[in-house]
Length: 316
Ligand code: FAQ
Image (cartoon, rainbow, N blue to C red; front, side, top):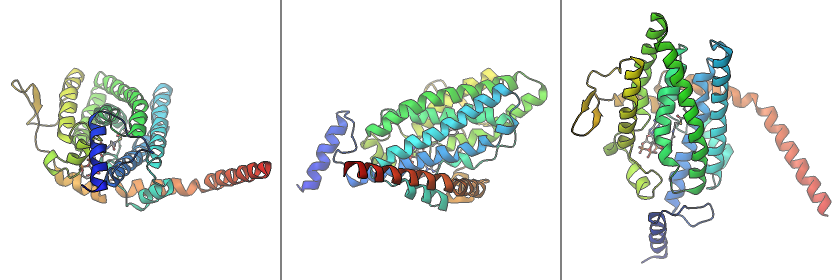
């Protein structure tokens, strides 16, 4: 048995016994790389995920709605920061991660490449997109890497507020005028399928799942989580009196789950290759924001440099 293999075996036993891996613990290089990939993609998703909703901040229909939406969008920025910090504990460099996002090299969630032409999209995003994010992220509170698991606990609490915020908008629209009901239905029609795609490819076509589940990075498979989301969300749509845009959706009394129609996987792969409706627009917006922030990074770095010089001077 090679030294590396025995370390890997010990690592696996440690994970199997439900221990958390901490930054200074030994870990297989592939475990570290998988986590950096997933956590940085997750961080990028939170950061880019601010853009579709930021589009409506100046046009929210009331002060109350505006305050809630503003708080939600700010939360997403905070989530991005926790996640980049968690990736840094694995040795990733923040500026490298940011550069990969800005150049289009790094992935972020497919869902944020869809447009938000209507106020009802704010409802649908909170209800469906945050709903899907919660389904996925509750399991991540138990992920094997300590800093990621702990970040997810706080993130999930905030995502619950986001989901309620969105569902409450949907309730108002669904109980409103015929035009408002139509807006709500239209938003559900446009966000339903992309929300199902958020969970990633089907288990048989998910190259990373098996190893990630063995290492307890992921606790449930993409299909399991997608099914949980559908089972939870269909009754919520019924409560709103809205129709899920899937003619093949039906309850299976034996399995106690909903069966759903075919997901357009070609659309998903097109979006993650950069050819979605808003991929280019999102990267342009992120690059512009980054360039506009240059002065504050310069000021922060100059301040940090000055502080460290002062400390050195005092110590001498
Ligand atoms: N979009 O082998 P798998 C949010 C990629 S946060 C783009 O199954 P894995 C909050 C995947 O990276 C939403 N790419 O991969 C919010 C891989 O490519 P790679 C983000 C996707 O990692 C709400 C390839 O396909 N949440 O919404 C997607 O085992 C509202 C093969 O896939 C997270 O990131 C996708 N949807 O499972 C913010 C949660 N799906 O890297 C603002 C953490 C798959 O090999 C407003 N991440 N790919 O080149 C995860 O749980 C996992 O990474 C999955 C994918 C489940 C996303």
